Length: 489
Image (tube, rainbow, N blue to C red; front, side):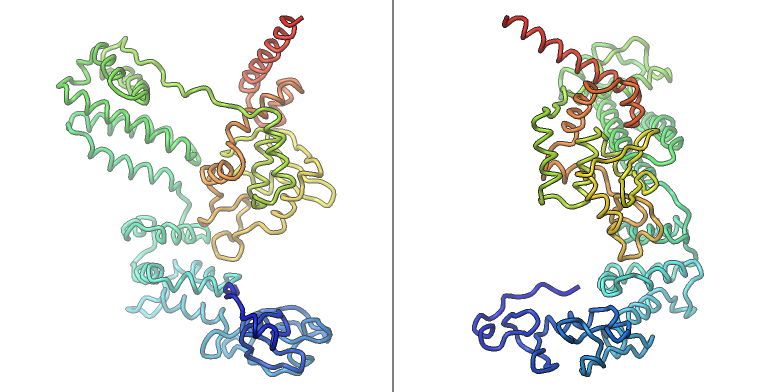
């Protein structure tokens, strides 16, 4: 990637400008009377690839009649022949291109110094790193000290397993390299969200001030939360957060009881009422733990905590939805990915947790149509909404590294093999456009006025019960509107 240009010199721009960019930068090479170029354009010229008019395919640094041309046709001398692979390419060091330099660096870091070999288990990772589409970016990443140190540690491990990687210092680099190993078949897939929850829960137990209560929470985590997670193929991020919050409140509740010298088995309704009355409304979340404790005969029956309910969620009005959608369709403040995601929220009332899990099996782009399958039906997009999807199909993003070798996610994330986080996308859209929750609720509210519940549920992938709830609210609003008109008559 060409580094950002510094401001040029206006005086030099007037007297001896670069023949390619017209800027007033220092000229570094003269390839003809009308091809004196600056350092920036010189570096860029070595990266132009294509097919010359003479049929030569490779680097086209020169210019003939204003078009990129090979060295022979342009009559220029430039060393771009790699001594390693023999291909035409921009050279990095010692006559080697970026790709060969990256390959040598990878081999050096992943070679065990004691055996002078690369472990067989690391062969897929080695091949993946060497074949990155942008070796210069790969070399920049791999030469960071924390990455270099981690790969050296990995190289000397006697075996490559999830447990052996867990034994290495925790870091983002460790998680990223683990993802690469999984994506390239060197390690089996495992749900990292579930592992994170287990690690968090183990640390959370230390916050309990009583050994008996610690054993109760340990049982609650294992036989309630983790048992449910083990039944899921992948633990959603929302489940992860709710489980953390539930256990945190349960820990605070038991610590509070311990300070009152009240064992859980002797808990009375008066204690419960004091707990609720003496703190924030999030204390109501303890009802989930209390329900489990009662069912497991750890406390007496009949104890009640009111259910914790969030405040009434706002929904976007029809006018505000139209304004937001206009920014998505015609505006330039959002990236292509954000525009596509916002469309699904504002037009089809989709939850971002479902949006980010879309694959190119769900989205079909042809010359004539773009269709998306949410439920059991494929929905064709209006022509005004298709541009972001066509662009994503042609440029899926994150395809220049080894992170996504064969991934079908529409919304690829930074982590290997993973889609973008729904929370990350939600925060981006809230900062740049609108609350996705308000937009989604507003869309469902309006859609239930236009079609039967069964059709909307089938087309959008919702349960009929959920759509029925929105339809009831929509009908109630309409009834109030009619009543208001009658009152004015």
